[in-house]
Every structure is written in C-alpha cells, then in structure tokens.
Length: 240
Image (cartoon, rainbow, N blue to C red; front, side, top):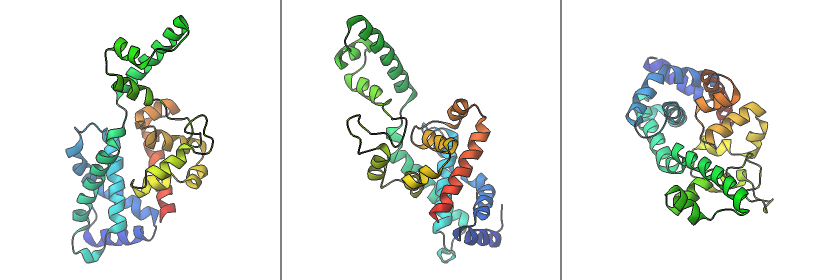
C-alpha cells in the first residue's frame, strides 16, 4: 500500500487526468476494494462484476476526494465503493435476466417453432403458460428477455426507424453512473473498434460475464478483463 503522502500525490495527478496515476491507485488499493465487496458476494452478482463496480466507485472517490475532508483516502473510498454497489443493486439488479428465465425463453422458442409448424399458427400466451406450468406473466418476461436488438442503433420497434436503442438508453438512464452515461453516448460508441464495442455491449447492455464473452470471442477471460479495463480507462480519460 502507498503511504499517505504518495497516495495524495497520485490522487492529485489522477484528478488532472493522469491515467498512469489512476492505474497505480487501483492496483495499490485492489485489496481494499476486494475486502469491501466481500460482503456482497451472496447477493446474486458475480465476483468479477462486483469488482468492476467497486472500481467504478473507487474512481468516483478519486474524482471527488479533497484533502480538506480531513480523512484518509482509504476511509473515504469505503463508503463510495459500498454506495456504488448498492446503487447498482437497486437500479440495475432488478432488470438482470436470470439464467432460469433465459432457459425458459429458449424452451418457449423451441416449442413455438414446433407448434407453429404443426398448427400453422403461434400458440397464445395462455397456452404457453399452461404448457410450461408457469404464470402468464413469467412467459411474457421470458419472451421479453430476448428482445435486445443486435445493435444499439437498430430501431426499438420494426415500424419505428426514428428511435434507436441508444436513444432510449440516453433518455431512460439519466440516473445511471457517469461511466455508463458516457458509454451510452453515440460519439463514444462509434469511436470504438468492432471488438472493443462488442465487449462493452456484451458487458453493460447484454449483462454477459467475462467468461461468456471470452467464449464468444474465443479468447481467455484474463484477456477480456484486461481489454475491458483498457477500454474503460480510455473512456474515463475522455470524461475528464
């Protein structure tokens, strides 16, 4: 761990936009971030996601910290990291699609194909609910879980070419963290190359884990983690 004087020096540099200082602060304070997120490990959020969220809280602490607060930087960091995780759980946790719901959606889709081929019409929601022995609302939720378009610039509805997903994100996520708000900006998304853009989309809009992304891109999870950190750091630099 850095001593108090060094920490304050790096914080000052980081607040001026020095990327290396931010990286050093995160590396040196990684044990602190990990110790804070431990209490949230049984809350249904994967560890690597918790760590990334904790790092976002840590970067906010860097941005907002002032020596005049008369507290150690580490003391200031803890509530910022906790607050970021709680905010995520409150605002984002409820909309995450569970694996059970994804599985149900796949089963429903297969059944719809079979039923349509046999009867020349799609089954009703009521029929699906009875067949799978679940509530109609659960059928609707499962089917809605797969409606994410393949592109942020695709129309939300097929008959609406004026409103895209990225527009909806900008309108509806005004209370999200500064990071996600800026990731959602069209000009920043467009400047990313295809691979980086895909990583951000899969992680922050499709709720994929690093392991799932690694399988899809045919690279290791470690590579995904490094690439994601690099992309986020570059985006954060543009926020300064």
